[in-house]
Each structure stands twice: as C-alpha cells, then as structure tokens.
Amino acid sequence: MNIFYDPKVDALDVVFKEGDVSETREVGREMFLDVDKNGEPLSLEILDASHRLPADTFGRLSFTIANYPKSFKASL
Image 1 (cartoon, helix red, strand yellow):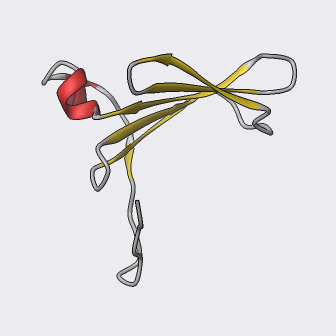
Image 2: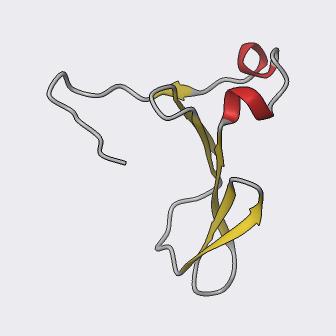
Image 3: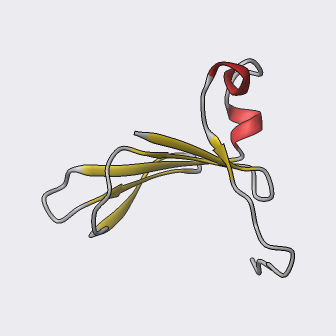
C-alpha cells in the first residue's frame, strides 16, 4: 500500500494495489474508490484532504508528496 498527497489539489490517494480500474465509485462526499473488474478495491482518493482529516494525520503517515516538473500545468 502506498499513500500519496498532492498539495496542489489537496488530494490524498491511498493505493492498495496496482491494477486496471474498471469502475470508480463515489463512496462519500468527495471520496472515490477505484475497483477492478472483480470489484476489488485498488485505490481511494480523498479530495479536500487537509480539511477532512485530523491535523496531525499528515505528521503520522508516511506518504509521497507529488512532485511536478516545472513545465507542468493542470487544467480543472
């Protein structure tokens, strides 16, 4: 399992295992679960993460912060 936090969009992504996403299910307000063709969970994305999780969560978790090249631009 890997945990990634992207501060540019304030999203926390918990990857349980690699695989092909068959469906994305909304499991809560701004929470999305990716599942494979067998319904097995692959990852969970939590949007607006810094406001939804306890303040000390980010100090207790071991995760990778997204790092973009200088030329990266996101369009929403």
